[in-house]
Image 1 (tube, rainbow over the protein chains, first blue to last red):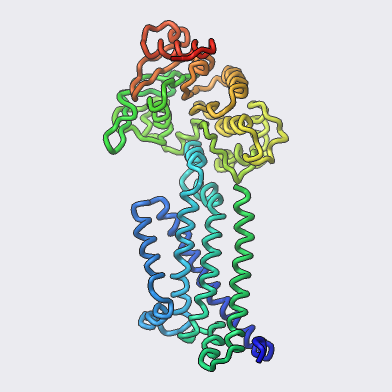
Image 2: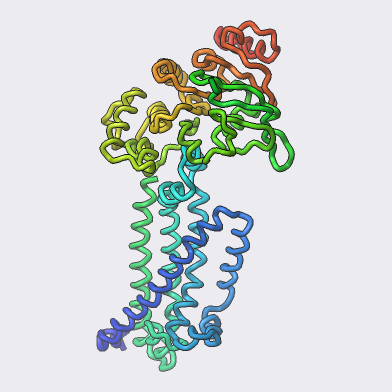
Length: 211
Length: 251
């Protein structure tokens, strides 16, 4: 039996699940960016609460992902639909690398540059938008890159609660002891992760070479 | 005439209670170049940063153009005081034109006026206009300092604060920039406050020299007065300076 049998026999199904997988991971990383960038900027300016927030977000990673997906059944509205639960759980996972890198990126800007900007009369907002964030962008994108690869990997587990994605093929293959089926789920997931890693890595490198 | 900047018993203490500057009282008249001279840790930079409120006085008063510094809108205040520092702190992601033009841009100047101003400033600090599209990493140390000074002058502020602006340069480039700055200063007639530990620079550029030690003002001298005062610290500076000039050991 060939590993590629199922993939070649059902290209449409594999494609649909791949797109589903990509949208689950993509929406989750998007939410994590929308939450993580402002939160990261806020805690970068307040070292006293930064460790508490990072510790709290870090503790989410202690919960096994399969269990975290399951716990969310109890949450109102979210628990009603599997994709909602999956997206919430994935966003929580993706939050840590983004938060950590926004914080590190902002704090890593050359203090002389920040002092010059402040001393010349830039407002906090101008300093943030024109100096700190642009200079931290390479580090922030590095965090998004880690978050994206992480989310694409964990999304396979979301199939366990019926959220869809390539994990469906893998779980079905496991139940049926069908390697070709497992492979039809795992190969596209690996390709997605690799593509996200390479494309975001390319952007990151371009951003870093300016600094 | 109201002094550009006036200290009245101004102190700055850390939360731990350690005083970085203690009971400073002196005035900086409009149009003078005041040099804050002292060794590392004497409070020169702290004194400078109190003027543009990068640090807030913990006791005493500090007046800018006759108004207590805490009554100023801090952004207005800083934009009336150009700021140039030893590490320059050019924005690495902006080219020379955008570095110099950033403050005019946030002040809402039209693009054409910003471009004219940038070229005017480049000529003023002795840089070729062809440099505008270069990034800070593509400039030499001397060019960077010149761009830093041009950036500080962008809004034509009446006061210029400079923290060892020539400190990181090789001796030849430093002497060249000091000489040019002395001529520039005569032309612009701004009030300049310059931090340095280099007596040669203080004598060359200063119309007044404020000698600081351990956070206190030891004395305020003209360069001529500084050369003949009996104060021990001033004498020590003169001795170190002449020994250095003679190529001997300052000790």
